[in-house]
Length: 143
Image 1 (cartoon, one colour):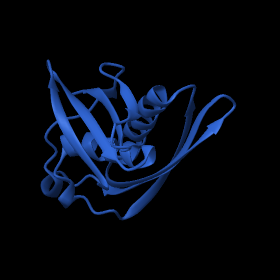
Image 2 (image 1 turned 60 degrees about the vertical axis):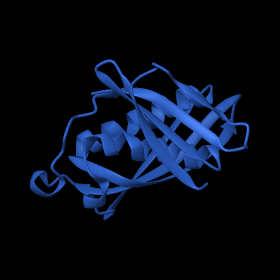
Image 3 (image 1 turned 180 degrees about the horizontal axis):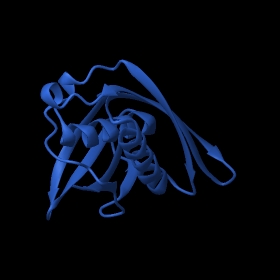
Image 4 (image 1 turned 45 degrees about the horizontal axis):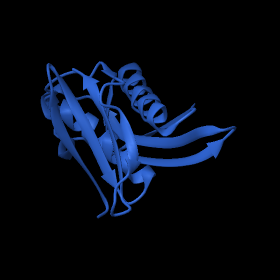
């Protein structure tokens, strides 16, 4: 199956759902889906790497922390990200994530951003394994 994402409507916001063969792939797909809300990611070159680390007591909160950290980095650096990598491991009864986002500084003419994603929320938050053994990671993002 690899990794893929989809969007689902949620009132004035947007749901983001990532799928993958592993939980890490699902987290990467969710991040891809979140930035695909902002712009056509085929236009975003994966030029610069930004490291991200976070931890949380469970996978659902780790997803929100991961997506929130990516939004902070994008906002602080004026960037859009189009490629992601993640390692997740258990730590002190919870989970820790170390990851990287690859992208470039926003070029409004080339990237033509559509909307701003303000936050990842706890709405419809879920991370779990599907009956076929693949993983899904989803939440609603505030646009």
